[in-house]
Structures are given as structure tokens and as C-alpha cells.
Amino acid sequence: MIGKIIAGSSFAGTVGYVIKKQSRILSAEGITPPDVQEMVQDFKDQTLLNPRIKNAVGHISLSFSPKDGVRMTDALMRDIAKEYMQRMGIADTQYLLVRHFDQPHPHCHLVYNRVGNNGQTISDKNIKIRNAKVCRALTEKYGLHLALGKESVRRERLREPDKTKYEIYDTIKASLPQSRSWNDLELRLKEHGIAMRYKYCGSTNEKQGVLFSKNRLEFSGSKIDRQFSYSKLNRHFAQAQLQTRYRTTLAKGFHAAIGNYRSSFTDLFGNAGGNGNKGRTDNNIVNFGGNIGVLPLPPNDSPVGLSAAQLQRKPGESPEEHIARITALLNTAAEAMAIAAMERKRKLRDRKANKPKMKL
Image (cartoon, rainbow, N blue to C red; front, top):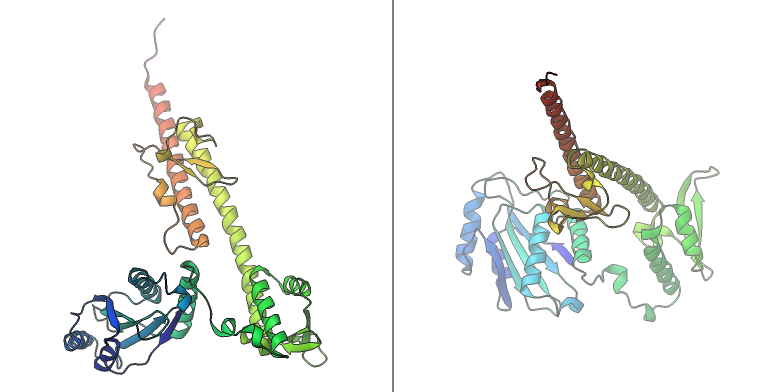
């Protein structure tokens, strides 16, 4: 999936372009299709809410690989485009989504008003960077074919030195996601006959570049691909290590929350807070699997509200966001159950203290 940001100076020209013979409207909001003039006027009317925006025309084409053509139904294309809009912050505004059939690859055009329904501005700051990230995320989520840049080059037609350069490119590309450090990457590349060495600043020990060699040919990282320059790879490893530490912290917090939850559950409801699920139905347990196993949920009539649905991963939620959210939910529930258990013990003590003593 590729998103192309297209400059547009007028709604008349943009809408007139996307509504053509070989096209079909997939979705629209805040405008009255299919008449072009009426849609253009609708767009123009809304721009009056925020005359400070000089160019209110938003226009993006979303293209898909021909290999996705069979499965790319109107419904799927519409769903992907709407999720694209949501992730790009294109919301609460007029838009027109039109599919074109004038090319061998499936594609559609999104026209939207940068003046929102309430006069707010739909930001285009860093739109190209955000577009690239969102397109890649959606490509992975929907299992779409990814054939961008060097991936689309036919390797069998290459000659030296490009043949070796692309072999190195493909190996680094495949090895990088599993590499957490320079040493990791060097060891993985060595398995494929690729050597790696550093360039230093003058006679110092300060690294300023990286070179990869194979078949007696050597290339700097940036010559293989800009994303493989020393500075960008170094940034990748720094982020990977930060992410590893963050995930470790999340995991510790999650397991601590599980322990607190089980303990509080047992104090309030008895031994049902253990790992077993005897006597409990699917409605009041949730199974995390692995070393967590089954976790009991408070009864429906309990003042502590927690359901299996709340603990499920939400659409668009990353694994890290999911773990952080349910950790907070479990901690909140554990605290509420601990308070309820203490309150129950207090009432029992008061009852015993106020119970009249029998005279002998």
C-alpha cells in the first residue's frame, strides 16, 4: 500500500479529476454526491468556517499492488481507507472516497476538507512522514503485498556490483528486525558471508561510518540504502534497546499486578482467586495462557466491575498499549477489592464488639 500526497489548489479541479468515467464512489460524508458542482459547493461552504486556511484541499491517493487485486473488494478498500483517515487524524470533516479503474493496480482517491466540521484545522504537519508510517502499518495489518523501492527490483537481471549490493541489502533487511545491537547484526551477516567494519573519525576511536563487504566488493551502509547509514542504524539499535527495557518493565508491572489481583481476590472471595477454575463459568474467568493461566473475575453482583471484554485487546491497540492498559485495570480492581475486604472485616469486628454477652 502506497499513499501519495497530491497538491490541490481547488475543490473544483480535484473533485472534477477524481469523478471520472472509470470510477466509483465508495464513501462520502458532509457532501451530496454524485453531482460534481453540488459536492464542490459543499466543500467551499465549509471553508468559510475557517478562512485563515489558505489551501483547504486535502487530496491523497491510496494504491495497492496488482497482487492484491483479487481480494481488494470495494468493502475492503473502504475499510482500509477509513482506518487510514483515522490514523492520519482526518476526522470530523467532509470527505469523498472514489475508486478508480483506469490502472492495472487497485487504487482510490481521498478528497477531504482541511477545515473540519467545527471550523477546526485538519493538520498537514509532517504529513509525508506520517503517511509512510501509516501505510506500512496498514500493509502489515491487512497482510497486503509490499513491493516498494528495492523490493520491486528484479534480482535475476542484476549484474555486478549491483548483484552483490542487493544481496547485502536483502540480508540486512531480513536480519535487522531480530538484531538488538551492532554485534547481533554482525553475527547474523557473517552467517551469510557478509563482513562488516567501521570507519573512524581521523585517528580517533569515534565511529562515523559502517561498511559491508561480500564477494570482494565493499559498500558503505548509506550506498546500500539510506536507512543503513551508520547514524540511522545506530539510532535503530538505541531504540531497540529502549524498547526492550520498556517491555521488560511492562512485563514486571503486569506480573506484579496479576499477583496483587489474585491476592486481593482471595481475601474478598475466598480460594477461587487461585489458578484453578473449578466451579466457574466462561463468563467469570479470563484465560491469559502461558504462565499466567486462568484469572477469575469478580461476580456480576460485586461492586468491583471488571469483565473479560475490558481485558481484550482493542482494534489498533499495540501489544505494549494493551499490556499497560490491562495492568492499570488489574491494579485498580485489586485496590477496590482490597478496600472491600477491609470494609467487610471491619463490619465483622463491629458486629462481634456489639454482640450482647450471655450471662451465666
